[in-house]
Image 1 (cartoon, rainbow, N blue to C red):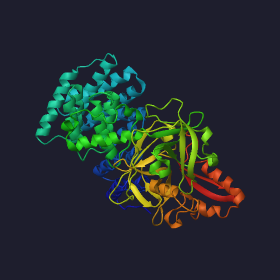
Image 2 (cartoon, rainbow, N blue to C red; image 1 turned 45 degrees about the vertical axis):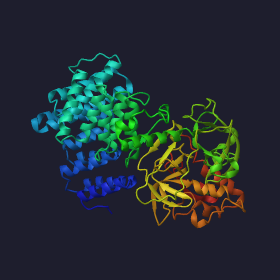
Image 3 (cartoon, rainbow, N blue to C red; image 1 turned 180 degrees about the horizontal axis):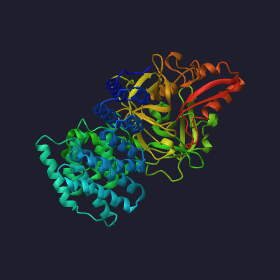
Length: 610
């Protein structure tokens, strides 16, 4: 049964799903929409069709955008707005050749329409420039740069006052050609055109007609004119616009980094990029990976006068972003002896967990990443290397595990606390949140780790705290293999949880049913476990307060804890090894949902574990 009965209702339901970051539901809705299109004799209006693909673009759901746009065109809806947004989605998905083929086919059709199609024609020709620009960034082939400039420049010169974004792209490409010593044939004078664009946006703003994309264009114009303070002023207005969503912010960042080649080591990149990245990190539905090399913008090195330039609100946004960078210093990649990233861990002051450990800094990670015997597919201490990619004093050879001080298996608290050799320290300890996680009020969480065993990154999208039932938190911060052991922070960069698992069908902490989510262990629960008295059992925590990892058999759903009661003791170690080996699958192996059999033919379905 479909979740909607009409196309306008589908659009409303899709908006609700995306606003709540229910991407699995959004995908299902799009499946239903495509099926309805193929079965129904009635079609959505051009406006509803365009609004549907625009809604998907807003949250960067480009794969679904391609599928829906393709189905609309298949059904006979060839509205230029739908077709050009399809071209946009193809570019974002990396299908550059396909996007160019479609744009080249659409271009002459729009030209036949005369003035009525002038806007769509300019947009499509701009997308041709965008496609070639991306090819140049990826390959360095100078012919692609020339083709991109030719496409943008033709549209701008045809109507300069109406095609500002084509003009600023022409300026950016001319400036890039000069830096790359590429000879281009152009009528664009960088300083002259950038000045004209800046003046045009000023007039539009004074008349109350400037849109958020015009503000981004003015930002770029001031970069070209080498007016950093004014560029920052325009950027502040741009990121403060409610209409500048994840798609727009990410596009501006890409332009400043890839074409203008700004970085955080010098002005204006040292101010512009953190402002945009911080806003994207805070934006609902944002997606951003920030390499740890941004640590080159040292914490505490905020240029004097920044508050005066930005104003108090944006100044605080920059400071918030820099506090996030500070947290990177204590996050490590845990590697095997071959240098392959297996998981993540982070430093924590021992005394903040248990007073006996005082000021000593210890490594906290998952049991299924590191444990004393290397059980269940984890690394043993003698086979683990710990590297801090954002710490200046980290040796190239990394740190070894001197001792494991305590741990709890993957079905309870899934942690290992280890001492490193040689000893290590941080400028200041990682602050631990003292608040009980509260899922009301759209609270967001932030992960720092080594997804897929790669570089140190902030990686987040739809990062809402979904639920809490001690000791477990559920949240939608997306993570990949290699993220196991990542620290999870609140919006003030205080440590909240140790990340350990994720599943597209994770059992809810309250009520019935499943959802797509990730799961972390509340650090306060780990602290309570470490300070336990009496029994040393890992099951000291009241069963009603915790639940097993999200392993599920089919049908009916049951837990590994229940299944283990049916397995003789002699076989339990083998069962656990079979299950947890999948946690640490090679990074080249895709595991989304797998069904396999453990001893005694107990069928277990396992979701993706990072």
